[in-house]
Length: 57
Image (cartoon, rainbow, N blue to C red):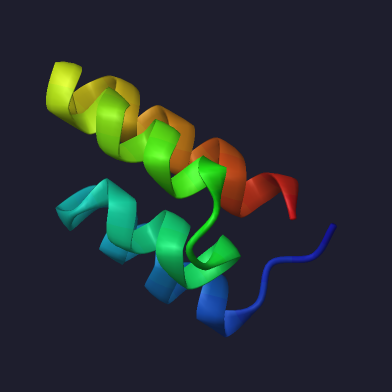
């Protein structure tokens, strides 16, 4: 899978606010709800999940 210029923006958004990176990639889905929960429980798991979602699709 090739990375695009928009993916770089999504990665930056995911580091600053992980749910924003997931929202930009997938929209308002269950992935967003999972990421919000992970971010509340711990910031690092939220970032890891956001990176996973961005790289997966």
